[in-house]
Amino acid sequence: MSKILKNKIHNKKAIVAVLGLGYVGLPLAVSFAKVGFKVYGLDMDVDRVQRVQTKKNYIADITAKDLTTVVNNGRLMASTDFSLLKFADVIMICVPTPLRRKYTPDVSFIVNAVKLIDQYIKKDTLVILESTTYPGTTRELVKPVLEKSGMMVGKELYLSFSPERIDPGNKKYDVTRIPKIVGGIDQKSGQLSQLFYQTIIKEVHLVSSADAAEMTKLLENSFRIVNIGWINELAMMCHKLNIDIWEVIEAAKTKPFGFMPFYPGLGVGGHCIPDDPLYLHWKARKYGFNSKYIRLSADTNSSMPAYAVGRIQAILKSHNKVLENAKILIIGVTYKKDVKDLRKSPPLRLIELLQGKGTKVEYYDPIIPYLKIGAIDLAATDLTGKNVAEFDCVVIATDHSQVNYQLILKSAKMIFDTRNVYGALNHKKIVKL
Image 1 (spheres, helix red, strand yellow):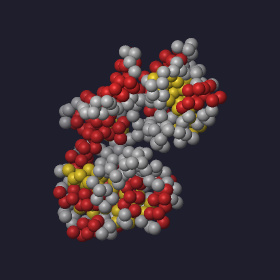
Image 2: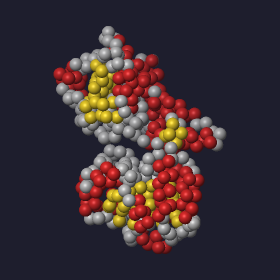
Image 3: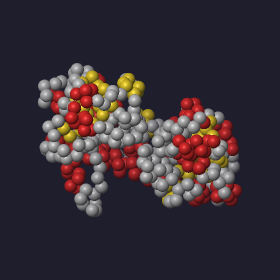
C-alpha cells in the first residue's frame, strides 16, 4: 500500500475529484468536503456546475446549509475543467449507466470518464468506480485504460469498485449512515478504499474483489426487481380471483420470520431497479446463462402501466364511459413517494398511454409543478373539490404525504387506488389495484 497516499487519506490531505454531480456524486462530494477534504466536483453539465457554485441545491439528500458551507469555505469547488484531475489523489467515478436498448447496457459514460482520467492521472492515485455496472467492468474495462499510462494498478495506481447505495429521500439513512461495500482489484487497492470511506462512513465492508462488489450491488437490486415483479403478478392474479392483495400482504406480514413485504404498483422507477439487474442479465448471457427471473420480473413491472390502463377502462365502462374523451386525473407523477425524482417514473408512462388512447389527462403533484418530458407537456392542476369533481376517474399513482385524500374521496366520481392510500376503507367509489 502506498504510504504517501495512506497518510494523505488519514490526515485528510488527499485531494478528491468526483466525476458526476448527480444523485450519487454530489452527496458524496459534500460528505467528504464536510470532514475536511478538498473536493473537486467535475461535470460536463454547465447548469449543474453553476448551481453548485452558486449554492443552489438540487439534490434532496443534502441540505442547502451543508452545500453552502462547503462551497463557502472552499472545500468543494464544481467545475467543467477536467484538467483538475491532475491534482487529484482520489478519483471517484459517479456517472450514469443507462441501457442502450431494453436489455443492453450502455457503459459509454464510464469509458469516457476513464479516458479523461487517463489523460491526467499521476502516480499514487486511487480510482474508485461507484457507477453500477456488470461484474467484471472494473477489471476488464477500467484497469486496461488506466494502465495505458505505463503505471500499473497495485503498484503506482490503485483501483476499486464501491457500489453506490443511495436511497433518495430517506432521511434516516443518508450516504454516511449506509454501510459501504468495497472491493479492490488487488488487496492494497481494497484497503486504501476502505480507509478512504471510513473517513465518512462508520461501517465499510471489504470484499475479496471488485467483481464481488459489483455482483453484490446487482444482487441487492435484483432481489428487489424480482420481488416487486412477483407481487405485481400476484396483484393481477388476486384481481382475477376477487381477493384483496393488500389484505393478503398485511396478513402475511404477521409472520415474524421468512417473509418480507413488497407492495404492488405501477412498476419501478429511478435508475437502480429498472436498469441495474438487466446489466447482470446481459452479462450472464455472455457466459451462456439465461437469468429467467430477472427478465420475467422486468417485463412484468414494465407492463403495469398498460395493465392499469385496462383497469381504468373497465372502471369507466362500469359507469358507461369510454377512454376516448374521458377525463382522468393522475395524483402523483414521481416514481417514489415524497421524492422529487421523475427518472423512469411509471406514472409518466401511464399518462403517455392514456393520451395515446385519446383520453384527456391532467395531473396533480405537490412537488412537481409542471411536466415537460417527451410528448408530455402539462402544468399541474389545482387540487380543489370543484376540479376533482370534473374528472371521470382519479388515479392515485404515487402516494405523496402532502395530498388531501379526503377531499379527493369526497369530490371524485371514481377512484382507482394503485397505492392503497385508503387502506381497508370500503367505499363504492374506490377500486384498488
